[in-house]
Image (tube, rainbow, N blue to C red; front, side):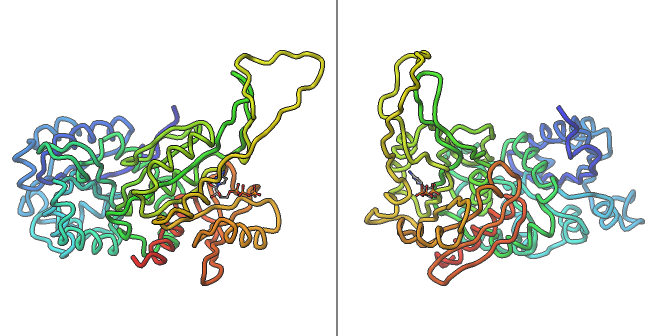
Length: 412
Ligand code: CTP
């Protein structure tokens, strides 16, 4: 395993008062193991859930709890502490803390540090699902994302109160994975945030269904027809949609990628399996994005055993696979459909023809040779208003820009 991008990073870990505060201790341990240097700041209510002594023991550093602590008051500590940090991470971030951030309050040490910071601020919200859905919280989250605060999660699942829904803090290992992704070149750079301008939390509450990766069409028990799609673009879109507040279902062909935090993933192999998985869920989707490189044909008769070499080259009979995107787009109550076109030449003419043929309001076209397997991409979007170019950037940045355009088209 290589050295983590978190190694040597100076992180100010803020802990606020939610049940998930105990998980912040696990998070602190993971970060320290990866070589990060942690300074922990706790709010008064966080100390009702875990003690400063726990974090002191884990980090080997004093834990800061009080704005008026004489150790730091003299030296303008609230500014100092954030100035020496590479970023501030607040985990868990409660409803109340998010409200205070939205107002720019500085009424305790952690809030003051966030206002006084000159570094990125990333927060992992944790709250009851009703609190998360409350219009005031939705407003506050929109405000802080517009102010440049980035949200990691929340996740969906069973909550401490027994209810099920969105609001659970991301698991510590998912927070670490998200931080590593943000710290990679292009992850949270000005380049990527500029092309994602305005996405913020505009997909809040929407159901987004995405296909990604290649399909694999078997010939016999060991061989098959597939393509070079890595799944990176589709996974990046799934992650970005989740961060923008959507409930995301990712129907994925075979890839080597891990599931983005908070995303529901369904693994399929063939185009027909992908078709079935998508059609079972399309009715509930608000947005459908077909990113998968679906095989156009499958083998008519799959051999039940490994085919032997006979000296006579076999002829494979192929039959056409159903077109998933076109079928979803033709549903009576179709979700907003986004298609992808991987072309190798004549991008404009082919993409426009494909958009008409599949009857989708938005088609994102790229050159296959400049997209497949790579970590960056450039897209040309075709919609009723014409053409829009998303300049070459990391796939996560391109994903955010694409979703910002989708949000615009669906009136978000
Ligand atoms: N797609 C799909 N189901 C298929 C084939 C394609 O849902 N059976 C979707 C892809 O996910 C993508 C779009 O349709 O969003 C375009 O796929 P592409 O393979 O580029 O287009 P084709 O219609 O197959 O046209 P061609 O192979 O001639 O370029």
